[in-house]
Length: 386
Ligand SMILES: [Zn+2]
Ligand SMILES: [Zn+2]
Image 1 (tube, helix red, strand yellow):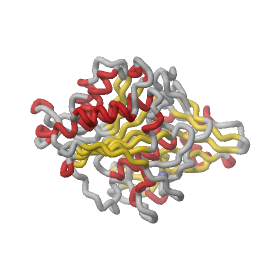
Image 2 (cartoon, helix red, strand yellow):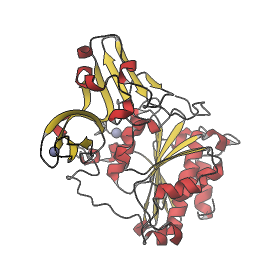
Image 3 (tube, helix red, strand yellow):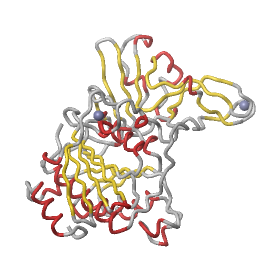
């Protein structure tokens, strides 16, 4: 590894020797959360290893100070994901989301995916954690601490069960890990990721290396933290804590998950429901759905069904004064009776805001099925099974 001192590189090789020749081919689809100073070099290393399908999520634009740590002058003002799409254009597929991780539907993680989070705040890490647990994926978190010249890479395997998760590190009774990063209760102002470039490059390289080794079947990296102190040339390997009860639900999951090929603009909710009375059917969503909204100008309330990712999302315009309609938090649900959705049952899911990769679960008597909406990647499993 070119960014690491030799002793650390050797130690890493001993820890997880190359078990399968040509391992890189096994890493088919990677979801990179955060295309900052770590996520960007990490993606380049993954591409070099032969990863052919990428999904990249980042809500930020390149700012002048980014030039120091992560981009070139030409890229100022561009969104990070637009630059990602350019840098990764020669792979098979790149799907980008210029959005906060909390707004992205969980279905972006496919059966053959691994999830890599490169955030610098734990609220975002907590969301990535839930996403990975729900879809039973591998999660790797890569963080840097510039003041200590330190890199931390943690690997979690949620494919069959969850024993230790990202949230297990939070103190007991500390539920802040579950707060929405945009919530007003959030005390942590967002820090800019301005890690020094060599540290971030090294972190990206180690993260990509760990990803390729765990996918190649190197199970000993799971449940472990690799802590690298670059200035002291030291690698420490420790067990990640397992905590019960944990603020995250280790049993969370979507039963009988089916990956649909159809996009939400061609499927209606009705087609996914069993032949039962609507009142006996509950629908659960991976984001909230609001059933009532209020005009921000005249205050008029009305019924309107919408998939909602954040409270300030405009869901329409007022018929009286053409002001903006906002969802009413009291009328927003993650689980709702199908009878409350009657007005949209026969309309395409996208017409009331359900995005591609959204997940919904249909619960009725003797019936419990979950659906991930298309488009889906080629789901041929290469090396990852669950
Ligand atoms: Zn946990
Ligand atoms: Zn109005």
